[in-house]
Amino acid sequence: MNVRYNSLFKLLIDKGLKKTEFAKEVGISANTLAKLSNNEYVSMDVLVRICNYFGCTINEILEVIQVDDEE
Image (cartoon, rainbow, N blue to C red; front, side, top):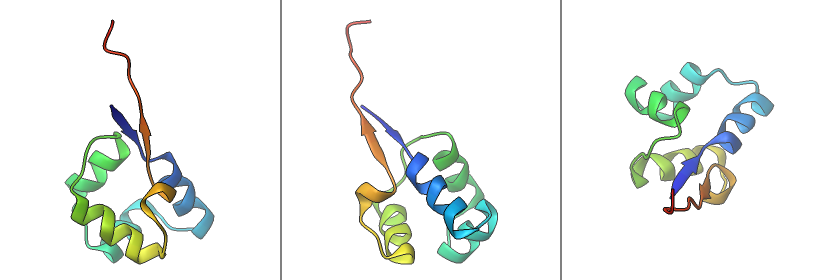
């Protein structure tokens, strides 16, 4: 399975926030921001902090994508 954070970045655009500004306000590192940008896994702690910052649920900031293993 893979994750996509497109919803998170759309939310940033809707709120008029730059990625670096958002990272600073939420308290996440540049490395973690890069992982989010590359749709890589991040810790649950980071996801919870993001949800608390926006007052949203986890399904509003990420999408889990099913990938077939038959390739």
